[in-house]
Length: 200
Image (cartoon, rainbow, N blue to C red):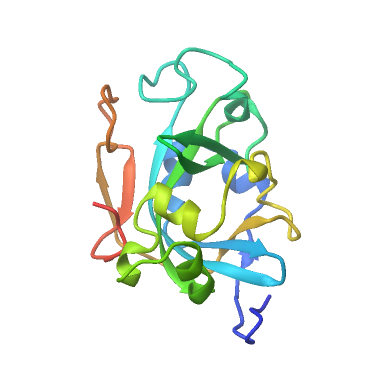
């Protein structure tokens, strides 16, 4: 896979088995993976550096807390699909991940932009590249991710968005999730320590 200007993007597409596990385990292991957005003939994306894991009815901060609804049904669907919803006029990009018969998703909060940066800057003009994708609403704006990608299969090469394993190892930090009124006791926010593109 290569960008229009010839940059090679190396890695294998993560398959459904990767996502068919406990959301917190998947979230931690998504750090350092490459998020790739296919926009026509252009490829945009970078390294995932911040995520949050969400569960089902046992998780008061989850979209699934009050049970299956039309707006949250993707959290019950097969792992490895995109789940996209709107918060305060910003799209949130999530990855469906859960054990068999379970419910769950992972919110991608930030990436380190690596390729297609010029297009991302046109999509979301900012003074500093550090502000380009350091937050869930920022990255969806920069990557032109919206509701049309809801349900997309991240495991298929021709999908509008995929995630690649490039075997990168990172040092992981954890905290409680950001901006939630009620949280579980476990720390379910995971981020790459020392990375300047982490949102907080």
